[in-house]
Image (cartoon, rainbow, N blue to C red; front, side):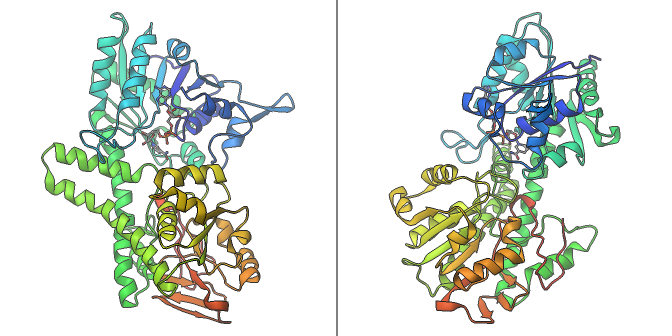
Length: 499
Ligand code: NAD
């Protein structure tokens, strides 16, 4: 089989950028181009201000060379898509596959417009045989459409082999996940050519991943495995959140329940953190994609089953917003609410589908003044997200302030909501400082139970504090823990499983 010497990755986003940074570092003999049509994104990758925040990413992309910081010598970012395709042996498709919002399958089906346009670019630019690898999350059998486009548009003497190699990284831990993956999945046809192409990609990863963790299988299974993994992860979060509603009405503590069930080896402790709901660009879209696939295959019971996972998540977000209102004596009009955290989980600057967005929109609808602070999401990104999602953006502009510190956000607040489980909201120092600002301690746990270890208890809707909070101030604990983030709550009274 062929040895891969040049890789072209189409799509310089949350997946393409970190994945290629790790490949370039681990396989110095491979020339890696990351290409994108978005010039702003490419120039950000070339600058010292990378377009995305991910722990360890700067160290992977900006290496000290000749005494000054520079890229790894084999890692390149460019908008010259065609030239890079022409020279590559292997091409990763790392473009977005968002949910369609108009037309057939609107609100559920994956929009494959970027996959198709990138595939056409490959077909047009390729003058020699290429291995084309789906890294984007795609519906089962997308590789068949890619093959048809490539053979219809490509030059007659050029052969394309198509592989599926879905990405399992989680934002916030992407570099660790890429360096030490639980498994790497490579799907191919079982023809000689297909197996040879798969072997070429196995060699790339085998530079740093133990061979037994590189799993090969049929194309369709590999495509399906990615959707299945995300559906099962999202389902665990919705399941624990559904149980949290029962706990809140009965006096059971969902964290204790999760701890108890997680000790069962068949269940395990991870992804069992009750929260305000999952966010991020993948879970909702991938589960809905599965729902759509089931519907088109005339499997309505299967579709309804998975649809509930997303519905439960929406319910949990609404339930939490209602809880804020009831905690503040059923009216929020002109009350100041600090919202700590806007990213969909800690250690990322990504705000796509963040539960914080729905909280802000419902707080604004209740006429609260909202003061947002997030350590890694800048004001522009917050405003852009709110502009897209606010039912009434003029109102939002009047009521929302983006702050530079947690303390500024909490000043004179009637309540503080922790929407993202950032470590800085989860330590005693922050708590003490915020108490100094306005007499309330802010530490988030789950919507159902809450304990700070500092004389405050928030459980089943009752707030007991010592000393009593000033001016009817309230503490509303939650953390998004979306996408499986875990709060390491050193202040918890109950044993908390760590991830
Ligand atoms: P993203 O939106 O951050 O990046 C996609 C990039 O592709 C954009 O910069 C866009 O400009 C570029 N692009 C689109 N069409 C192009 C074309 N024809 N030529 C060149 N560039 C083009 O998306 P992402 O978060 O990196 O996700 C990419 C895929 O990976 C999706 O299918 C997603 O479901 C999947 N995935 C994402 C994650 C995650 O944590 N974000 C994890 C696993 C899998």
